[in-house]
Length: 453
Image 1: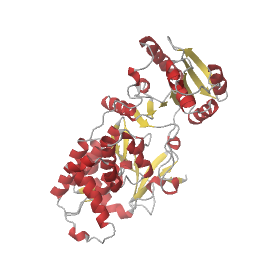
Image 2 (image 1 turned 90 degrees about the vertical axis):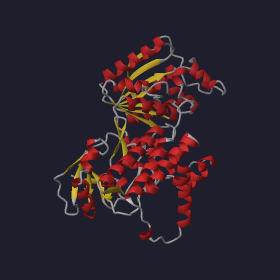
Image 3 (image 1 turned 135 degrees about the vertical axis):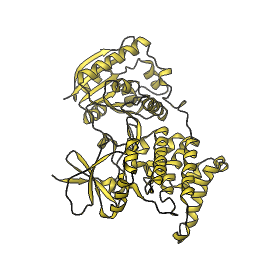
Image 4 (image 1 turned 90 degrees about the horizontal axis):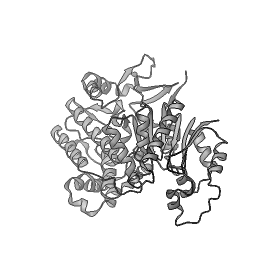
């Protein structure tokens, strides 16, 4: 069987990830032998796995003379990226990384890699996925991943908390983390009066600039283990001190201002539940999910759900609820008109969201009018797109006389002559079979259940 090396792991000299068919493996190179043996024999691996901080793996029986070991890690159902996370997801990933570093030091090991891409989410809880990120601790050696941690976690979180929540999108154009000089320049001046941010961001950025063209004698850089633990504690305290309130974004308070009555909302839930059952849905992509009310309805049916919305406040609320209840939901930030694309070296290191997502059902509730009217997307373009990503489609048509559509049209000319229910059905019928349709009680909205032709 032909193996395929994942482009996302080509930078790591310790090994790489590859697939054979539907199976995922990681090669451990001979250069990493001593560190791998230390990880497994020191008790660190067992400790982290037992606490659900690191994904478990098995040593595979595959023979390869160029590899010290071939391991088979547990597969994460969907790989997401930091610029698709809400504030608390990135914060929890940061705290996980620091917790692992502290535990590693008690086992005479240290993280040599503190990239946010080493963390994924399982049942709305962060888990570390890079087994080869650990190295033997050497007394006096500074934490090699300190700069990377600040660029991947502390910098973005500080910008999101203290400047603008949308600045996490800088991670899209800075795959190695947001440069600290940029973080320092964007943060409010008042952050220089906070000792932790002054030290870890502003002075850190200034130090980087000062030494950028100088040769550094590494033998003079000595830091004791207690000092290193103190650094990690300081970072942990700083991260815990950063907060963001999800209220006040465009859609974070949507359900407080919706035009549904309690009866119509209940009827909509009943219809969605029946369509999910009829489709025998196992995996769901909920687009325009807001704070995830209908995603949770699917999760209650043991359906693996990715819950997407472009509003950071909505995704923040969705994540916190899913985390609290240990739900099989992955809330993600997604702007359908500007989704995550292929980035990195040769545009292959991080793949677009549509290359990563595989689901049998897409749900698009109260979304069609935003795509067609707010974003001027033709119905045919929308229908064709949905047909490319799912087998079943649960979609809600919101007519022009609906109060939410009237708000969209209030300050612009109505040029959308083809935005009618008749045209909607005719267009979608080119790509889907309409299996069911029902008007939602006490509204003019209609819910459709469709199967891809």
